[in-house]
Length: 150
Image 1 (spheres, rainbow, N blue to C red):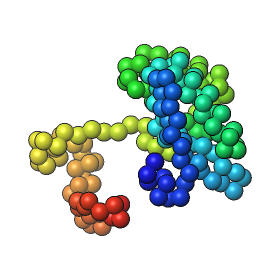
Image 2: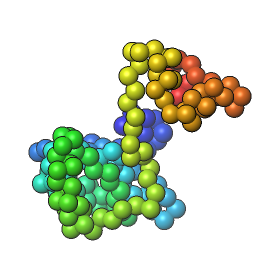
Image 3: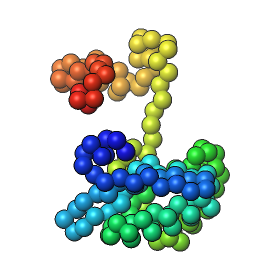
């Protein structure tokens, strides 16, 4: 939310019983839409239904033309065990899959404790090649605590 506000985009945080959502108002030439990155975060499919209703109402108040959501489960197992139910809720509310994703669908968690050599040894061949050739391509990796460096 802080990053979006720094970029000048209006944001709203919504929450209810078993769900929460960050709504970002995006402007386009044809009008604005509400984007809910990585959300709403929901306990279960019932909470998803409640969240979508609240987001729709908020979008109407903001005069948004459409809503884009990326529902997530607060309990990893809940989403996968009830995936057909989650799809049914989204379809009932007239949502359909977007042609392109804004956010990555998958993230990779890498344990950094073994050290650089062990991490590189466990990586795929293409990742090792990228690592060996990064300097030739002008890629620089460094640490900073200054937000202006991002």
